[in-house]
Image (cartoon, rainbow, N blue to C red; front, side, top):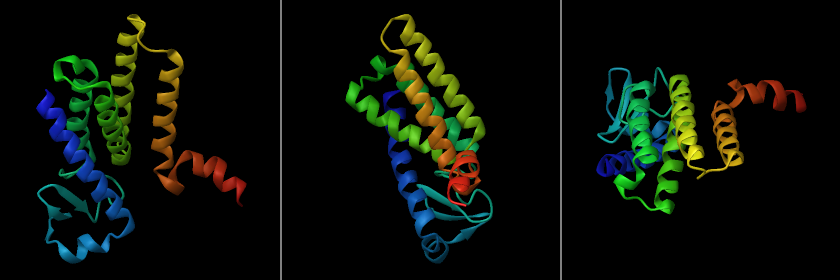
Length: 168
């Protein structure tokens, strides 16, 4: 489980870097890397989609849903088998934040639902042992929901209902 989480963590970092490049300078992928089917393959460690999923992090997979499966298994191992994996608290938090950011950038509704279920079950497990405060859970949940919406930009609920009205 430890090796799996570490491998997914490394690929998540690479995909976040690729995702950031894809948003800022997408012409890099279209210019320098060969076109295959419906995506430009940047390398064996990152794929860039140019027709579908253009502003979504797909990692090395052809669609975000496939990537979510891999990320959620790693997150599950990290949260529920942390002692078996042998990660320190600091290391666990760092990995959790990277995986969380990667899940948010996939913009997968199913991924968000699974994320809420996994984090919710983890919270219930921890709260039964009195290891976590309810305030922290609400804070984490709020950050996840707001981040997921803000990453959608002008298509997001917060943009359409709050920000757009403030500046129009």
